Image 1: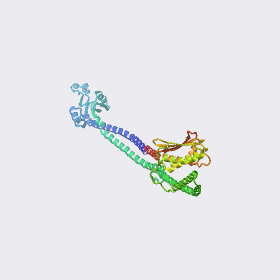
Image 2 (image 1 turned 180 degrees about the vertical axis):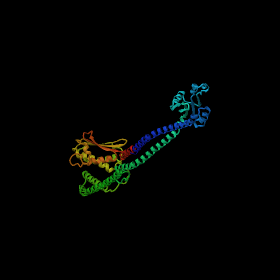
Image 3 (image 1 turned 60 degrees about the vertical axis):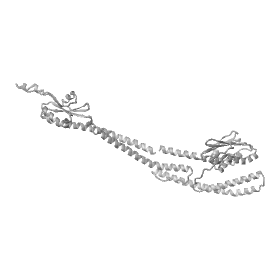
Image 4 (image 1 turned 90 degrees about the vertical axis):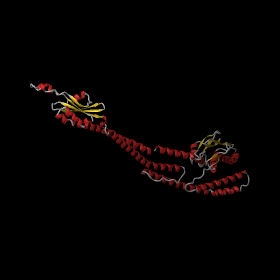
Length: 469
């Protein structure tokens, strides 16, 4: 927006300056030309009294030399011959009157034909080498016309034009620079509040719930800042209410968990009893962790990035589920877990995601259905594939939407949502497709950049938006 305003202001100012500067420049040029020829006419008019009184060459030469143009050798006088002296007056002594021959005084630059044209009583301006010649006819006492020629050089015609044009150019450039600077300040006043709002939106998207926008700028942006701050406050309130509700609901599970733990303790010895007690203990730990997490208030402090060995977690959870698979006659496959693969996910969260995927296999496929877990690692991601040979999922997109259910009766619709949130916390995703075993394949993509990928993309989008502005 800032640079758009600058460009618009620059274009408008340049058009206005050109609209005024070009005509003014032409007017200045014409004024200089008119001034030069008016001065030439004034110089020619100084010789008219002398020509009206006498045609004596010596006197005319003195008159021309005394003028400014004559002193600068820019004036010439063309005096015609006295034809009446040749015709006589009809008296016997007429042949004694001497005839006056035509003569020129000063340096002449005009063409003879132009001088003869001016003798007919018409003023003229002709081009000559180095400038112009003003030819001014002046009536003599004999009724004929002498021609006063005044030379006007090009420098006199353009005297002051270059300076005037330079001043007009400087004024025009000053106007352009001033308008651009003013538009830049105005654009900055508009852009800075918009940038603050964009940064706050990006930080809010990263989970910084305490971010607020300082109100400033035009009325529209101030209203947007007020709306953003109100929205952020509302989000904090909703999250606090949700945490309280989750904590209350989780706390209600303590009573049935206590009963289960007591019943499990009375089962005696044996693999089934040990598995039951381990499952109850794990469930109790998960409920306690859920309560602690739900009770966290306010903005979360920055914590060091969490991580775990994905292969170790997968081996541990497969050991747990393999016992149940053996009881149900399911063939379980495991591949790609022989090395250490660090992922930016906390161990309990990854274990919960794996339990959700494997639990779906046991819950929504018949007993005896085979399943497999494969781990693949690339340069920037770890992929966990959970495949089964069951009937598959009819609507994979609906299964990934929170609350739509994973399929089959008794589903809450939160299992795959847990998997999705774990994947998205790292910048990855979850896909559902057909497996090589013929049933469902759930692909968990865990990015290895610790969840910074989406944040960097958001920041790049904000920076691109600023560059356009």
